[in-house]
Image (cartoon, rainbow, N blue to C red; front, side, top):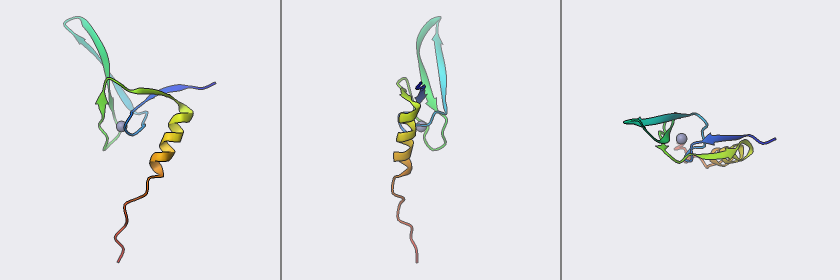
Length: 72
Ligand SMILES: [Zn+2]
């Protein structure tokens, strides 16, 4: 069985906070904020992905070439 989790569309972290907005008694769509340091993405649209897809995306992110180290 596949499990779907909501992740940050920017860094694919699942460490997100949901903010329920209630203004003057009116419910407005909840917004989400990424808790990952250095990301700070927030918005109302956070993708729900299957955990396998998240793992795949994380691998792609981690496979990004590191900036060249200035070695002397
Ligand atoms: Zn993020």
